[in-house]
Length: 306
Ligand code: NAD
Image (cartoon, rainbow, N blue to C red; front, side):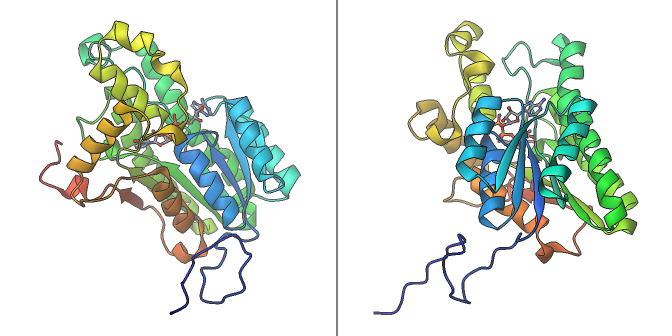
C-alpha cells in the first residue's frame, strides 16, 4: 500500500515534502481574535510558527484561547475604536515578543440587521458612528500605530478584513457596506504610501461564513423583532464551533452555498485563515494593495445581486 501523505503543520514531522511553517519567527497581532474568523486565524498563525497577540474586548474568551496556545499567544484587551487601547496593544506586543511583523485588522461588527432597523429611512447616526468607529477608525488606528514600529524596520505586513459587501451593494446594512468599501480604499491608499518602507498592505473579502456575527444577523432577519430578542438578540454570543447543530446555521450555510458560483463546498473560518496565512507569509512578498476575494466566485457570478 502506498504511504499516506499527511499534511501536518505542527512541526512534529521531519518529512521534507510536508508544508513548512510559513510564519516561523514572526510576531502577529489579530484584532477580533477571540471569536470567528479571528480565532481561526490565531490558531493557523500559531500552527505556522508565529507568536500571536490576541486583541479583543471579549476578555474571558480571548484569555481562554491565549492560555490554550501559550506560550505562542497572549491576550490583550483592546477596543479597536480607542486610540489609547491600540497604542497600548502595539507597545505590549513589542515589549512582550520584541517585534511586530504582522497586523491583522479583523475586528468588525455588522450592526442592526432586523427588517426595520436596517432601512436607510431609519438611519441612525449614533449607530453609524459606532460601526464606523470599530470597522474603519479601528483599522486606520491599527495601521497608524503598527506603521510606527514597522517603518523604522523597513518591513511589515498589514492585512484587514473587508467583505464582499465592500465590493457591491445589497448585502448588508448601509453602514456596514460603507465601512467595508472604506476598508478596501484604506488598504489601497496605505499600500501606496507604505510600500516605500517595504510594508505590504492587503485586505481579504470573505463571503458568508457562519460565525456569531452572521448567525445573529440571519436570525434577526428571518424572525420578527420580538422573537429575535427572545433568542438573545445581538448579544447571543454563539460559539462559532457550535455550527451544524442549529437549524438556522444549516439554513444559512445552504443559502450561502446556493449563491456561490463554486458548488459543493461550505465556506468556513479556516478558509479565511488560510488566505491570511498566505498574505502574511513571504510567499506573497510581491503582493500589496490587493483585495483577496474568498467568495466561491460569487461576485463574478450571474447570481450576484449587486
Ligand atoms: P465574530 O462576531 O465571530 O467575531 C468578531 C470579533 O470582533 C469578536 O471576537 C468581537 O468580540 C470582536 N470585536 C467586536 N468589536 C470589537 C472592538 N471594538 N474591539 C475589538 N474587538 C472587537 O465575526 P466574524 O464573522 O469572525 O468577523 C470578523 C471580520 O470578518 C469582521 O470584520 C467582519 O466584518 C468580517 N466579515 C465576516 C463575514 C462573515 O460572513 N462572517 C463576511 C465578510 C466579512
